[in-house]
Image 1: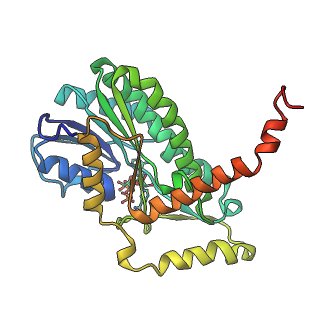
Image 2 (image 1 turned 60 degrees about the vertical axis):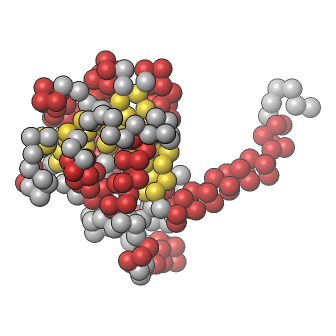
Image 3 (image 1 turned 90 degrees about the horizontal axis):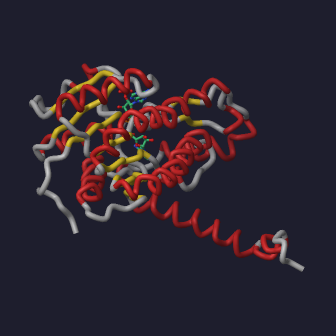
Length: 281
Ligand SMILES: NC(=O)c1ccc[n+]([C@@H]2O[C@H](COP(=O)([O-])OP(=O)(O)OC[C@H]3O[C@@H](n4cnc5c(N)ncnc54)[C@H](OP(=O)(O)O)[C@@H]3O)[C@@H](O)[C@H]2O)c1
C-alpha cells in the first residue's frame, strides 16, 4: 500500500551532483516535491530544474559543522525534512593489503563518518517531527564482497550494521530506515573509483581478474539510474518500507548466495557452536 501523491515531501539528498542522488533529486522535483540538494560544489547542481522547490547547498559530508549548517538552512527554508538520502560516497578498488592506511581511513571518512555526520544533524529534526525516512546508501557489497572491493565493502558493512541498530532505535519514533542496495548501476561511480596505491602480482589472479571482468561487462549489465531512483521512490511512498531494498537482480542474486553460505556455515559447524555453551556435555 502506498501513500504516493498524498504528501509533498521534503528531501535532503547528499551526493546530489551525480548518479543516484542526482536522479532522485530530478524525480522528486518533477513530482513537485521539495529538494535540498547537497553537493561539494554547487555548480555541479546547475543542471537541476531551477525551481523554488530546490535548495542547493554546498557541503562536504566529512565536515560535521558544514553539514549541521546545511540542515539548519533546510529547515529554515522548508520547515521540515521527510526523507534523508545518504548517497554521497565513492569506491576504492584493490586488494585489502594494497590499500594504504590513508586510503582506508579516507573512504571511511566519507562513506561512514559522512553518513554519521548527516545522521547526527538530521535526526533531531526527524525525531521532533515523529516522522521521516532515512535512506542509507549501501550496496550489494553491504552483504557480500568480491576480491578488490574489501575496503568499499567494509564501509558498506559498517553502514549496514549501524543502520540495523538505528532502525530499531527509531521505530518507536515513527522514523523509517531503509538500506538501499543497488547492484551495478550506470552512473559515474566506476569512473570515480579510487585505485589502491600498491599492486602485488600475487593478487593478479583474483583482484585483477575481477577488475578485467567488470571492465568487460556489457552496458546491459548495469541498471538504468532512472529505474533505480524510481525503485527508491516506491519504497519511500510505501506505508511499510523495507529495511533493505535490493535494486537489480544480479546484485540480489549475489546477496542471496552470500546469505545462503552464511546459513550453511551456521549449520555445518553447529556442533562446535553448541559445544561452547555451559550446558553442553
Ligand atoms: N553505481 C553503482 O554501481 C553503485 C552500486 C552500489 C551502490 N552504489 C552506491 O550508491 C551511492 C551513490 O553512488 P553513484 O552511483 O550515484 O555514484 P556517483 O555518480 O559517483 O556519485 C557519488 C556522489 O557522491 C558525492 N561525494 C563523494 N564524496 C563526497 C563528499 N566527501 N562529500 C559530499 N559528497 C561526496 C559525489 O560528489 P562530487 O561530485 O563532489 O564528487 C557524487 O555526487 C554510493 O554510496 C555508492 O556506493 C552505487
